[in-house]
Length: 149
Image (cartoon, rainbow, N blue to C red; front, side):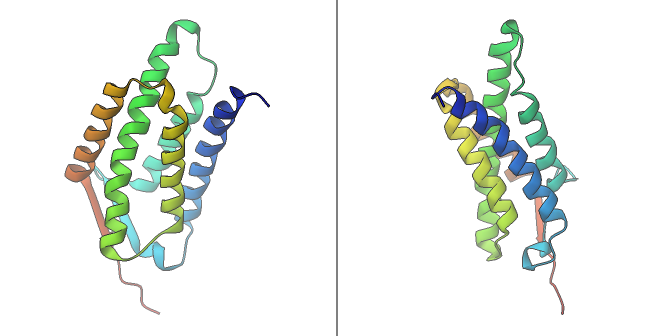
């Protein structure tokens, strides 16, 4: 396998894993099922599935004239998501409740970011990262519902 194929495979496999982890989180009945979160009123599970689905579609071979735009969109998405993940992981640490599905999703974002970093515009990545932090700081609402046995 050539070095060029590894990032392409990762860009297909990890979004699929991310989608799977959000679906699994939706049917989770362990302690992490008490974690709930919304962004602009939309459930984070739905946002996560849509986010990874779009990343998966972006792996399709674009026409050469759209390659730069697709790369910039991927940069903004992954960098913004990385900024959001910082606050989502912080929320779990503060609440002292850890969701393995959410953490797996976050790990997918981190690895996808790292794999694609070489091709990213560094200024665009920094701006999107900071925008992701700001957006989640302003529009994320998280809660922990007590579970009674």
